[in-house]
Length: 134
Image (cartoon, rainbow, N blue to C red; front, side, top):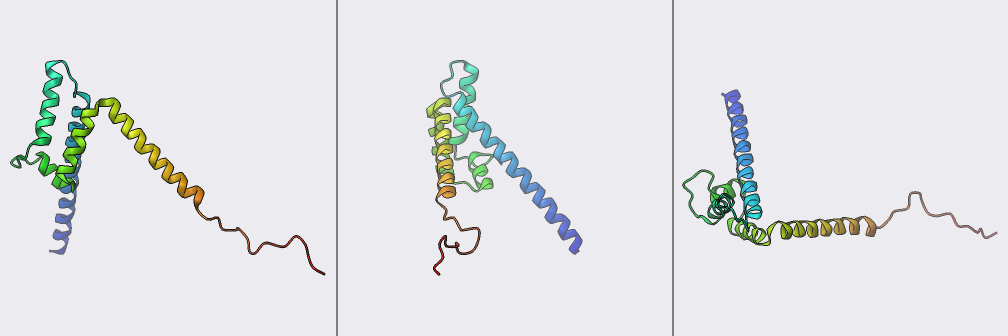
């Protein structure tokens, strides 16, 4: 019985991991469609944008990979994520890339501040005085 329980746990883990990966992929595709097709002029591109937009703003939970269910699987706050996705889309690709570059620059600055402001420890013991009193 214990062996059967371990197998079931492994199967559950694989199933949960697969669900998270699929949910993450769906979310990434929606975010990409919102950014890429925000100012679309062709009918197909406008439809792709509207599909992603409707999916993000929907509160329908009947579909297993609805926006709210995806948020639950990924442990994300739906309202915050909605705001971020729609805000990124309104900036378009240039605005999105500008925001990402700014985030990267802030991360690099925080990293360099930690590296260069860290107190240095001497490698040896106490320093040897250069002059000796006799």
